[in-house]
Image (cartoon, rainbow, N blue to C red; front, side):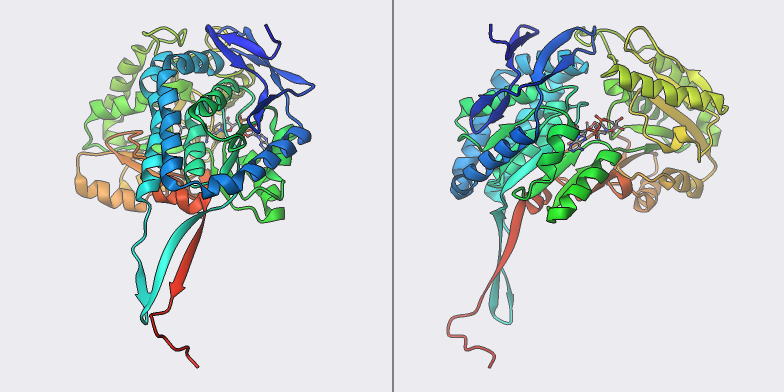
Length: 487
Ligand SMILES: NC(=O)C1=CN([C@@H]2O[C@H](COP(=O)(O)OP(=O)(O)OC[C@H]3O[C@@H](n4cnc5c(N)ncnc54)[C@H](O)[C@@H]3O)[C@@H](O)[C@H]2O)C=CC1
Ligand SMILES: O=C(O)/C=C/C=C(\O)C(=O)O
């Protein structure tokens, strides 16, 4: 078997880049390891400035023809990719779970269907994308969304294919060409996506995938003057770095970053629902940017809420993410585990009390943790842990709840649990967040705007907002027939 092919969970995966419709190997490789058992999965091509330049050149060469492809044909090809994802749903699920440790049952039932939906949704939205003409002193204004050019899409490891296709699908629908760089801790499903797109008939160069480290292949991609859009999901420090690169060329960018979202539980809430919402925050071992990791409970119900929460949390099963009965899998990488453990140890040293957990489990697992007796200005309340670690604080009234909720540098999401619709309206109006859920969590409609305020991001994607970002939006003003100019 070629050294460029690996078999993961019975699925063959090509570990080379995909550039201009061809598989391209780098001289060097990096090692991809499974978080489930630490086994080596693959030696993956380790991209450099050379492969970055080749991928942007391929995307640039493919752009004019793709941009000129009629909308209906672009939409057809996106649906064909979605068909391919659905045909290979089981393979994609197995590979993703082996590569990033998230639950197989979630990949099968939620995540991979969402990957297909990303393509179908933006294919359909493209066909409906329209703006009603309007007139100015008899002149017609006509708005169009023109393809912008090659896009660089840089994505993280916590939901690799879902977050990648959330960008790839609208960019392709918009008539742009793409260079996708997946995270080095979970590089494999992006490679399978390249196969699926080629099988679907996407022309060579329209979707390119380069593998490797941010500092080696990411930097030359984001600094490239031929790149017309950069969309990034990941950490704040990397976002700052990318934004500086983009600034040199004035490349427009969209940033979806971390969060430290609150869950506000009012005394009038259905406490069972609220406790269930809180426990849900352990999904994907807490490696979810949207997770409501700060639980804020109205003081009179804090004890009862905590009792219900601990009862539900005790029922969670931590273990092999391939098992149907597992609720929480491993953390992605020993470095991530170390980071989580460091946050919790420092919090405990500073006086926090672990209601549950507060320590590592076996191997690469971190035990679901709830910390209380935490100060608002402490690291554990202010910084994103990206692990199964929640904090619990109490509040006395609505004003205090809102003050605590808004008092971090983030603003990605918030969840409000209350039985009072008027309170819900009052509180949500005062929260700083890109998405607010009332008595629910993670209900996503792809036509909704999605993104973060403050350090949780720049810009919004979703529905028309995605096309606004990935396109050059143009307004054409036409004078009425027979119009004689102003002079
Ligand atoms: N909002 C979200 O969904 C996510 C947030 N995070 C946050 O980021 C923290 C660290 O995770 P990391 O994987 O280290 O995130 P990261 O921001 O370092 O990596 C995300 C992506 O950016 C790439 N990258 C890194 N440096 C780059 C550079 N100089 N130029 C271009 N691309 C570059 C990486 O290779 C990866 O593909 C997490 O603990 C969490 O706080 C991480 C993943 C997802
Ligand atoms: O639903 C979306 O588009 C994004 C979800 C984001 C995550 O799951 C994440 O970053 O953890």
